[in-house]
Length: 436
Image (cartoon, rainbow, N blue to C red; front, top):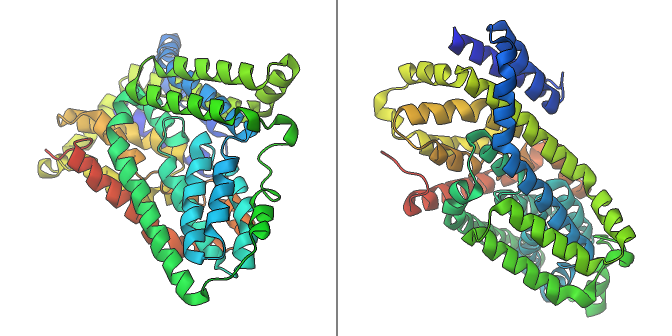
């Protein structure tokens, strides 16, 4: 009975959000409540919901302040000199332009927001691609590759959702796949090199004046108004960001506190005026509210599914139909299918509806559920999100570059899937996921 109730809960949840009958937040909260009441759990679900919220609170706080911190760094113009230098280096060489596109995208992607990454990078680079008469599919594709691999960051949507669902910290979920992420970054650079080499062979190298590059670099790149840029504090912001990244990897302090402290320091030093501080916080409030409310709503969803034992019942049912000989391959199967499933499941549907069942099933077979979580983020709405018609940011990408969605998917799918395969192999070799 519980297994059926759990399947209905997840099935209805998936149906409502994939058909856009309800928003994700409302579906996360109301659907499990309704089915828990049908199951006769009554007011006992209150404690389950609170327990779920408490478990995801650290993740919600971390993601909220990560968005604020990297958004603030974008406002100060921290990455502008780096981007500008890259654009000056590439000049009129299509090969350098494409590789530079990948590097710029991965730098801008540090804020964890796909939409802003696409708007910033496309705005900066599209004039250069047009001037060189380069294929816009390459621009859309390489930006997709760079943003995809960087979306594995703990403050990115998929990893944050996985942490909330599995109730683990980024130190346990994300840190072990850092080598795999590095392998993914190298693959993106290699793919960009191959694509750029083809374009150089097709177009040759165009002579461009340095002033043209300088003009293209930031006249089209409106990261923030001049009022909020802080070029005189570039080195301070760079050192602060590097220390933060090292502290995150080394886990010197709990991750939420690291982001809170770093944000407070950055806000005070860059904008000592209280009015400007409020303006900067308010300017990023929309992204913060959207992400944090979703995570707390997910706490209710997972809290009820766990507290009512629906997940346990569904996992036991799945165990009965999975051949025991295949059980040991569950993490790698999850990894390989994760990227293509981005075209079918939204991140909310996958991480809050599908991942709990797979992870609990893995646990039944003696496999660490965290391995399944690591496998999932190697592709599902990381490398896959810039190709998925289920994410709004994909349409920003294709709209700004002027390419067709189908053409974009056909052009870059194999390269994006290759990123997932390379990261999966690296994860296996480093022990982040295993075969038993």
